Length: 112
Length: 115
Image 1 (cartoon, one colour):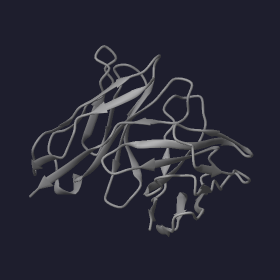
Image 2: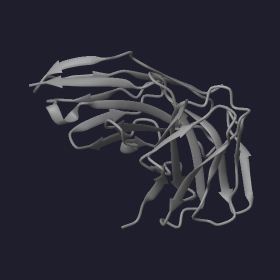
Image 3: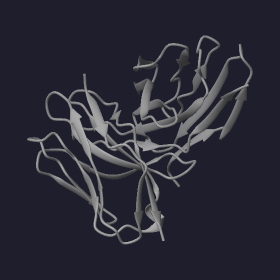
Image 4: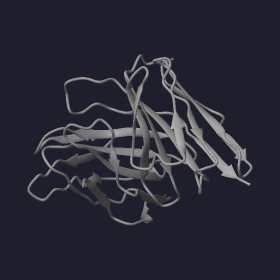
């Protein structure tokens, strides 16, 4: 079945460091890919998305590129801030299905 | 402001009781979803509905029930048959379209604790 695998956290970085959170997926067809962010005690917010191979999603300095050849959608940011501390979820929407399949989430802690 | 509201924010239940979690959206979205989140895990789909008076089981529907009598409302009942109901419950909605990138909007969640 469809699945998403994320790197385990927590990821601890100093402010202004470079961030990469790895995400790989298994799915048939051409899924859409998403990154969501969850701040403590809150619901999820869409961070960025990509709907086809080689698409790059970007928002608030975060980027991710849909790589079909490596079935990956890694999240990157060039310079993290303390306010980026949250849990990040990679997700996919399989072809022909409306609900999302989520990874287990990666907690990011940014220290001043 | 458009969005999704969930109530209550915190809910405590005694073993053997049924409880109902509320989810309302004013986004005029067609589809609504319920997910369960456990610590250190991703979200798992409980139920979803694409139109009024119709809903489908997700991956972990046992011990839960839903209704969709109105487009804007999708309440979830956690029954006594759910063996381990303590979790964070998230409701989401999306507007169905032809594009593959339909964004799901999430509510703030309800934290259910069984005493």
